[in-house]
Image 1: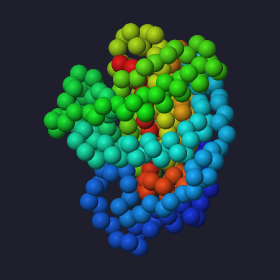
Image 2: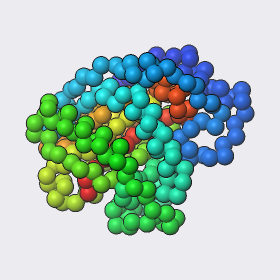
Image 3: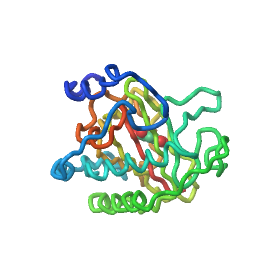
Image 4: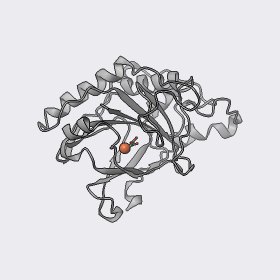
Length: 271
Ligand SMILES: O=C(O)CCC(=O)C(=O)O
Ligand SMILES: [Fe+2]
């Protein structure tokens, strides 16, 4: 089943990522999203504007997948915003669960602080840093996305995000176990205020369902530029990232950003 999703391993992408082996591997900013061994290449405006056509699929009540929704230009801007804030105070770190085990991703928050142990309780992280403000470009993008989704799914409630969680998964190792996003206020959860999830970079297999029984879950393939929204009756679905597929990022995105191998995911919520 898992291999059904494995896209073709495109030689150019592999070559692009494997360049580090020729250049030497100096990791001075290990949590940066950018490959220190790559230089950005200009990509023509035409390429950045030539988007795949957007389609949508309703996955359940209050749950919709907008395929190829985020333009390449916006994907580039998002990578640059996350990199700008991600390498400073309040930027990317590897969070731990209560039992001390590390999550298999790096994370940062915009707007408010959330972590797997203190949830939304602490505004300041244990390293003393505070999350950077939620950039208005990101807020507008999330709100517009919901409006567009509401045109197909009228039971989808509105949402004005006050937090954006950013995860970065390395290919092969990166994953996120099955969970519910249930730390937001009871008011937000009861309203079914949607979670808006944007995927950028490598593709992933996302599992979801109304049960924690892994054998009964559905799975969907999330690609760079896809947006998954779950609100209304699907707000409390169990979900997780089963695997990230290497060499599946769009090449112009890599050339324009020097994004390292892996998958960036942004989830917007209203606490
Ligand atoms: O990476 C994803 O697609 C999901 C992220 C997620 O579920 C979360 O951050 O709560
Ligand atoms: Fe989640």
